Length: 208
Image 1: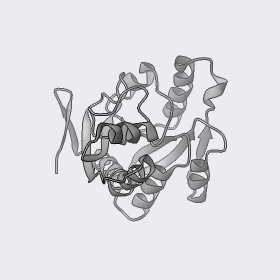
Image 2 (image 1 turned 90 degrees about the horizontal axis):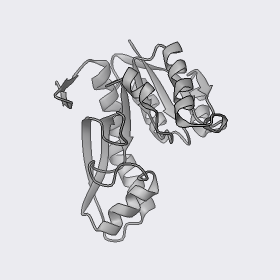
Image 3 (image 1 turned 180 degrees about the vertical axis):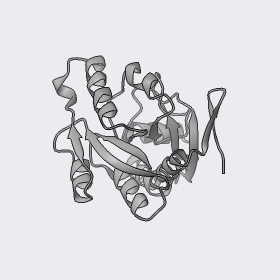
């Protein structure tokens, strides 16, 4: 069984989707062994504790810069012997000391169809505001590996939803979470844990 460590910063809706997927047998070959939060008091920690998952808090504000914080996170991941790291609403960009050591072992979910509406500054509702402002007819989410650049790692899975005429950023965000993020993130985690993701030339391919 691969050890899955989930990094969180807030409410943990994607974490809950992973917990539910593990309980229902959707995630095969892996188990969530630790949840690490960048903020004390994050509701995601409560979700973990309610399900008997060990937690750790590494407060971002206690570290002067991204590098020192990333080193602390790296130390924790090593201690937890993480086979897979999942960023589930984790609001800190990790330094390359983490992304290089855990190359193709860190998965993130981005609430848009990369390469659209992604990169630094595109997070949370800002992504959906930008999509609606542009007038796209479909949007969705991308499950991808994390590398040194924001939202630039190899794409594992993507899914779409239609954008409706009267959508607000909040409504679109909810539709994408329910129909894409909460389904595809557990699927990608399960594929990883079953060694069904192959990297060829920097691109990710799924072996069914």
